[in-house]
Amino acid sequence: MLFQKLLNVKSVVIAILVSIVLGCMYALFQMSVNQKVLLQQLQSMKAGAQATSTRALTTTSTDFIKSNLVTTGYTFENQTNMDGSAIFGSFLLVSPTKEKILIPDAVRMTLGQDITNLTSFVMPTDEKDSQIIYMSSAKNIDEAQSRIVNKVYSYNLKSLELKELYSHLDEKNSPMSNQLGRVMRLVGRDGSKIILMADSPDNSPGPCTRVWSDYKDNMFYVDVSEVQMSLKSYSVPQSKVDKEKADADACASEMNNPLTTSIDGMPVIPDTTGWHQDELVQFKLEPNGSVVSKEKYFNDETVSVLKASTADCGNKVSDEKLEKIVKAFKSTVVTRYTFFTSRQGISGHDYTLTIYPNAAHFKNMKEFKEIFDICYPAGSMYPFKLTDSNLAFTSSCGSGYAPEVPDDASRAAQRCESFKEKVEASLKLK
Image (cartoon, rainbow, N blue to C red; front, side):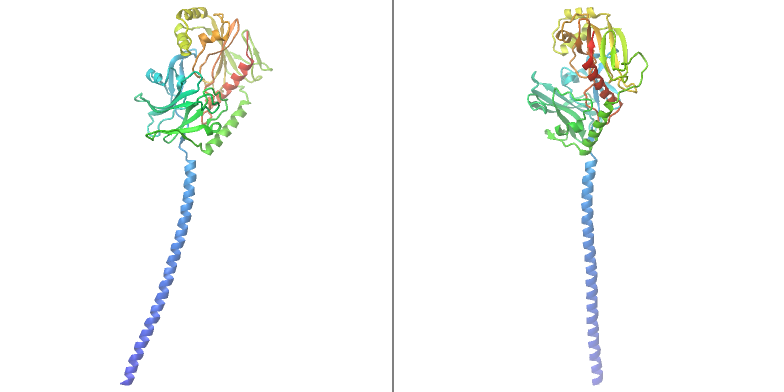
């Protein structure tokens, strides 16, 4: 009996010991599992932190590269007669696909008495509505150009609604002179930001000027998504600055390589010294490197055209005097020299020199410009020089600012500036 009791006690003790051992083993196992789980969590958190950091850096870099900067859009040009002369007061919007749209008189009058108040280098479309374009204008408050009102408009191509979005008076704050007001020129769009370049009203840039690099510190914007718009500083992406600088260098290099392709017609090729001379003019270009055509046609000036141009420039000339001028020039022979600027024969940027006989017997440039001066950009006949026998008119080459991506037209404009500089510096009028 006693032996049986001792055996039972021994069994209980062994069972207890086994239970304790198994419990300790399970506890140790659970601790090991927990440690592994904790280690995995720590490693996962570390990897997650690294991935988050990498994503943050990648997002910043991508956001910088993926700029929403738009520098293309609509432009404007003067409507012209068959001979290339401008039709005063009639202007065209030109779409990116070269479609031409007449600007209604009501819109033109809102912008100002003439299109010289339109300062946009480009008129980009809205980021959401392609029927809406943006444009800028400037209006002098005084003759000294020390106070200038700059405005930004939206224009609906479908409804023809012109809406003023922003207006500001700039006084003696030109980036080039503290005596002049600045002109704010619309140059692009970045999302809902309309980008404006601060410029001087009397600035005359060279053919290789690049807006986004040469004027990167003069960039501002207004945000059309804001209820109360205000002018803020705009930072041009460095990639854009670098690209423009490289293009400016390429432009400078190309300017040193004259166009030599021949063109059918009546060419006037300067001799080996670079001089050309005929019965009317003498001028110098690159030796054997330029192609110029010479054509003649009868003068077709009209009183209405001269009246519009003199009024446009603020010159008060009586109808009687204009009638005498038109009569004096009637059926006289006009000679035009066209300096070709494109191998592809693209028109619009060829430089022209036009010669009238001095049938009105102008004695000085003041008399000459009183009748024939034109006061808008991109014209084809600006009074340049006179003698007792002849009058010389020269054309514009456009704004001088090149577009974002140089194309045949922009390179033609650059060659035009080169021709203009050389011809006007050397011209001798007989």
